[in-house]
Image (cartoon, rainbow, N blue to C red):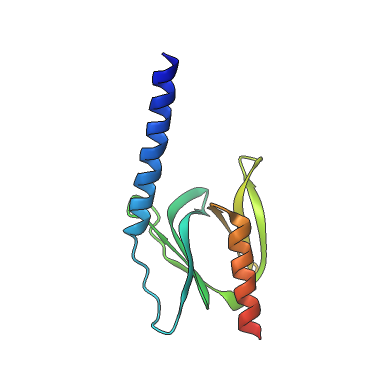
Length: 133
């Protein structure tokens, strides 16, 4: 039944989105009192070939990633904005342009899958300019 299949697909997509939003809200990221949170979103951080799901937060001084509880890797990572040398969009599965790669001043490279990667890059670059002014 075509209509039943379409309804089932839409329902499953809605449930997945609702579940993701709920799990992201439950991830608490503490920032120093003198920092301002500018942007928050769901992200996957690729480490050792594993996509670690969690929350990405941009403050006025740093980028913070914290995984949700279901991951094997439970790292919380901080990227001070003044250490980010290069930002660019990247592709996953060779055709989806939903990634963002950042390179640090120590030549470490980190890849994130985020919604609207260009928007994240714009916000990060804008804040880096504000910091250097």
